[in-house]
Length: 440
Image (cartoon, rainbow, N blue to C red):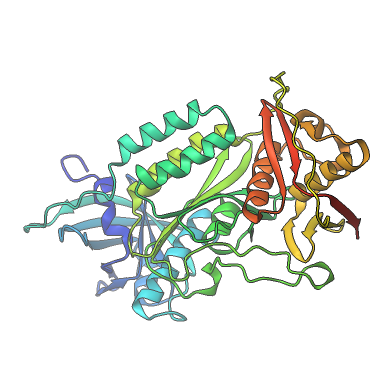
């Protein structure tokens, strides 16, 4: 394909805005021309076609594995012709799930929900790419200058003095440098079956502590398949509805925090945060407008997620001595705060209000019990990490992230409890009122 446009340079043609034309030939030489719902960019030499029906095009491609595609860039109106050769079909895995999610958005946008159903991803090698004659429109600039934004954000992540500072900087950079209006960072729970929200941007309610099941919506699928999932059109497909409905908790009490997603998103992108040792989280962005995130934004946030992974990987750093903070004032007068703990899932309630559950709930209850028995209010990360009662899996659990989750959740609820850092690897449990602990 020397002297011709690069496939990567025309990735805007693969967004599904304008259907691609495909021409195939039957064994008897009779041609067939139709439209394809989706052509997916793989790399500089390969594309994937959406296989939804066993029709004439599909039969021709299997019998005579050479076809012609015509693509149109929706922003420049330029046309391109590709000669492709069919190689194989994939019916599961990251590529299949990514195309399935995007097809759900295309189906909703075109009124074909229930008709468009992905059966497979047909992998094809591109043997020739030609730009067709004709005047096009000037190329549209990206929503943000991505390369300078990426460089600055990666540097800020590396220089952040703590994980909390790194997360705050990440959300600020998404808003200011990448011009993202709504975002969230989710980390896996101890059992790896759910993801919990640790940081968010642009929502009326932060949703800190809310959870999404592995495989649920664009976030859960990105986590399960370890691949970016991007939708450019609002979808009514329930498989990609991320907002969690409250579920009855233990003893009939509410113990779910709603995920703070948009009610009607036009664009969504979920990128896994991982390193060579496993999944560390999912970075999620969304926007009410359609086609807000393209291949370039997906590339940039994938690189940013790789830099974030270096900050999320747990590191058992020893606590260092810090200047002793002033002693907290004694708890004030008034009725005691009634805190209840349910061991079945380590959920903690303040009277009838749900606070936290899981590992963060176990940590909070452990701190409250230690304070009640010994009067202690200052603790170290190290002692929590080594406490067998907390059952922290060293290979997957990030204690610092759990403490940040607990700190932010307590601050958001204004519960009269607070986690205050007193030095590196040290913190204080501040209590504003007398406490009454009840083990259920």
